[in-house]
Image (cartoon, rainbow, N blue to C red; front, top):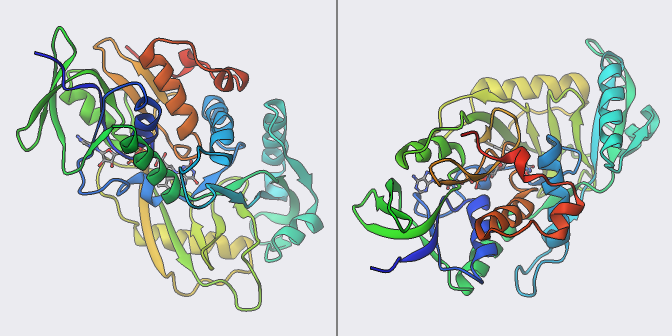
Length: 377
Ligand SMILES: Cc1cc2nc3c(=O)[nH]c(=O)nc-3n(C[C@H](O)[C@H](O)[C@H](O)COP(=O)(O)OP(=O)(O)OC[C@H]3O[C@@H](n4cnc5c(N)ncnc54)[C@H](O)[C@@H]3O)c2cc1C
């Protein structure tokens, strides 16, 4: 009996969607999504930033490799630009002097475009920074990343899914992978509703559930750890036009704030380890953010408008996990806090590995090293 699909991908978030888009021109692709629609979990809950300064070395290399596609996607991919200018400001007070120096040195060593700003220049970018704080001393300055961008995550994700379907890929929602077993030709998959199908290759792009899915496929989990990150929106101060403010973060990642559709988005930048689930923000997360933002800025947050949380899922090394394990299951997981900005680069690498061809020039030029992201065992 023939196989139903060349590649079945579990999870239709940004990772699975981008890979389906990359593979669809040359393969019969099936995307399986447990929820009634894609984008319900991490992909629909992000802060929508593209920052080449953010993440461990390989995540940043994949991010750099993604920029060209996001800047000039294929004709008809999206109605609106995927990236729009924002800029990022990492702010330090005197207590963070060492962190400011080491972060600057680390970013310069890897070629990220950044500028060191003094207090006045930092205030010119974000006028509500406190010049003196009780706990961290005087405003020392900031690192400015001019090329940091906002991402239209919805347009990117929908562009991938629409483009994949146009090229023949199938997307099944309400389709939870329950079990997969190896066969001489590939895999037999059983869904939670009892359906079965056969595919030559099986990709695990299940986000926070990737270790759960691995066990359902007879593979050894990678030790992935989902971590809760919470966020909220609040009213911008009436006497400031905040729309052009950069994303502004304390350099020690205690909080960040960015403009968001006429309001401001804040986060305590928390990373609380939890089991995979449909996560919500804890009241304490939001209170902590309000407290820290109030310590370092003159922003007064009285009523958060909307609060939410999502899971950022980390491998043991902190890098993405991309490649086949000893059981033949292909992993595209461990996207941490970088899964949106790195999605195109990760999909290009995964597609090359699945096809058994060398990574393309865009990946090589950015220093992407597949071996650094290979699954353990
Ligand atoms: C508050 C917050 C801010 C963030 N900010 C940024 C940012 O600014 N920039 C950035 O690049 N990244 C950011 N991230 C990280 C980014 O959101 C994630 O890295 C990315 O969305 C992960 O995508 P994914 O496709 O791996 O996971 P998901 O979007 O979670 O998709 C996985 C899918 O797999 C499905 N699934 C699970 N198990 C099964 C099964 N058995 N069968 C079928 N389907 C299954 C799930 O239903 C889910 O839809 C942020 C995250 C959070 C929470």
